[in-house]
Amino acid sequence: MTGVNITPVPRIAVIVVAAGSGTRLAAGAPKAFVGIDEHTMLRHALTRVLQAPEAQIVIVAPAGREGDALTDALAAAGDRRDLVSVVAGGSSRQASVAAGLNALWGDVEIVLVHDAARALTPPGVFERVIAAVDAGGVGAVPVLPVIDTIKRVEDARIVAAVERSELSAAQTPQGFRRDILDAAYRGADQDFTDDAALVAAAGHSVAVVEGDALAFKITTPADLERARSLVARHPLLASAAHLENPTPAPRVGVGTDVHAFGGEGPLWLAGLEWPGEPALSGHSDGDAVAHAIVDALLSAAGLGDIGTHFGTDHPEYAGAHAAAFLSRTLGLLGEAGWRVGNVAVQVQANRPRFSARRAEAEAVLSTALGGASVSVSATTTDGLGFTGRGEGVSAFAMALVVPS
Image (spheres, rainbow, N blue to C red):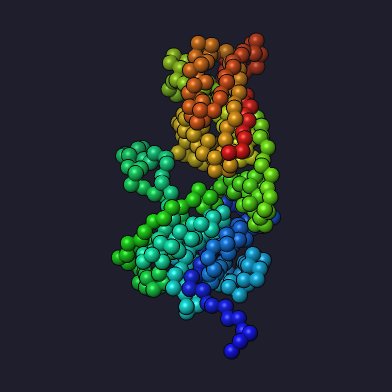
């Protein structure tokens, strides 16, 4: 028989889990249907799935939103529309994945389970997971090393440190031999946090492969702001990519912060402890200088503001000092494709006197920002306003960021 092209049935399938409600995102819609740019989170996720090795794609959508999911799927798939289908999810993530498994074609040998909320996951992560299973593994999970210091906490108190070298942050897609995953789901008698945990509970060892910083999960408004900024600043991350993309120009941001005296413990300002000076009040240590710098850098990079990333809904920053804020901000900038050019900050206060410790403050702040140039100046307000009356400290910062 000649003149007939028969498309082989893929031996790989990707179940895209998009049935979450997105309660923590609080965007007024199921998470997968919230827009990153003109396209939804789901559309961005599918764009990357379709750039990975050819696979059957099953989207698990919230009940009643199957049509919306199919619209996104068909738009993303183009001439590969025959590979996509949509099913309704269940009451839990595990039930939703089970619904996806029931929709797989008979020839599928390897199954990848991917969260639509990890919408910017590069195709290379899918390729690494598939290669690990193809090499004879039962399953494989992409991971990143844990960077932050981890503490075990009980009743709002630290009870022990956790060895960071033993920890990794798991991402998706998580890939498995189909027979192993099917059997694990049939035998599950409780809900697990992810598919790797379910497979491990069934007695199997799951391998790890290198993850990617872009595979972060969009869970909170800060995560969504980060994803939107990444897509806006890097056109290749948009759903419709272009071959030629101009290098972004340097950007300038402005930040301010104000704190009143009245906190507990010593004064922390410009990353330094000031013995004998009254403390500033605040969620963290009240370091107005560091906080103004953070706001200026985030503003320049289009990543929101300090409240977005370090507000009172982030208890891990309660009592934190400048180094924690600045190092995390440096990481956010790097993930978004920016590095710090320089920072200038002015302190307005009657006390403390900066002249003797200016160079020390600049060195501490510069170190926290990866060696970037930081200049600090200080002035009084001639007795005017709350700073003139000695009630607190204000700081004003300007920051330059350049493409990395």
